[in-house]
Structure formats: C-alpha cells, structure tokens
Length: 117
Length: 118
Image (cartoon, rainbow over all chains, first blue to last red; front, side, top):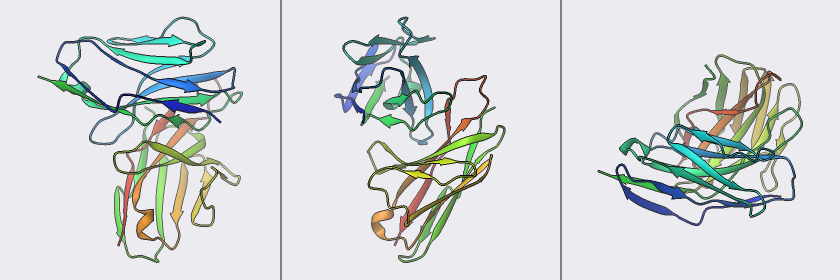
C-alpha cells in the first residue's frame, strides 16, 4: 500500500507571491503517477498538474510547476505569481501504473492555501 | 470535453432508508469509474473501483453490502447506500476514466453528492 503525506495543513501568502506546497509519499511501486488536485469551495476536483514517475523532467503548467525527487519520494508544487483564485484546498495524490487503465487515487490530507489580497 | 455529472447533488434521507447516487460520463465512454468519500475538512478516501460489466472491487474496510455499486453501461455507475445511518452522512465523489487507450487515463471527477442521514 502507498501513503501520501502533506505536512502543511494551511498556508497563507500575499497575492503575486510564490508559494511551495510539500508532499512526500511512500510506495514500493516502480511505475506510478503523481498529481496535484485543487478543490475550491465548490468542492469540484480540478487537476492542476501530473508527473509520470519514469520522467526525470519536472512537469510545468503555466504558473504551476513541480519539484519531483524520486529517490527522496518528494513531490512539491510551486505556484508562481499567486492569484486570489488560487485559494483552495490542494491535494497531492498517487496512482500506481496498472498497465493501460487508471487505478484508484491515494490522496494526502490536503493543504488549505489562502491567497491574501 | 470530459464532463462527469452526479445526481443528486444533495440528498437528505431518514435513517434506515436507501439512497441511490448516479455518476454519468457525458461525453466519453468510461470503462472504469471510482467512488470516493470525503468527510468534512478531510481528504478523499477511495471506496471502490467499478468496471463496466463486472463486479466492483471494494477497498479494505468498505462494506460491500452497505455500499452497492453497479456499472451497467460505459457511461453510468450507481452507488446505493443501503439502510443508511447518520454515520453514512458524507460527501460522495465519483470519477471516471476514459477507456480510449490512445490517451492517458486521467480521472475526471464529478461535482459530488452531499448525503445527510437524519
């Protein structure tokens, strides 16, 4: 079984600042995917970014980027030029590779990110 | 594209009754659907994996007789909470995975269903 740990229950930064959310995980799987999901007050889960474990290059999506350290089992999310709309719960999630199909996600406990005007 | 709907969005029922929640993929075929449960201010916990045309696979600790899952078509999965009790009150979220082998099997989430058992 795998575990995902997010050690920051809540973070608060000023608008336009850069913020980094931490995530560590534990698994014995060799092939897997890692994700960051955003859950705003509407509770709709929104995929922010994903990383395939076999790729060494860190994923980037506009203002969002990750620092994936496979040996350390660390997967942090950096949000640049933060905006008020980034205020939400952020969940780190793990999915093992199951040979062609999706598998269930294991989520961390989440980090509540607040962007202050 | 890749829209998943859930119905109802909010349901209140009396203790001892059964409640059915529907999860539909609106614009793609989903071989696999997943059901998650989220308690207030907590994370999502995987309850079960639902594959079209076969029995669902339940996570350890999830009562299969209480949470009945049916995935009768490539666009619909249902979760029935049988003999609901107040402790079953929670937010239930489904996700669906595109069965197209040419695309990454991302999970697309429904908007969730809030269940309150009185």
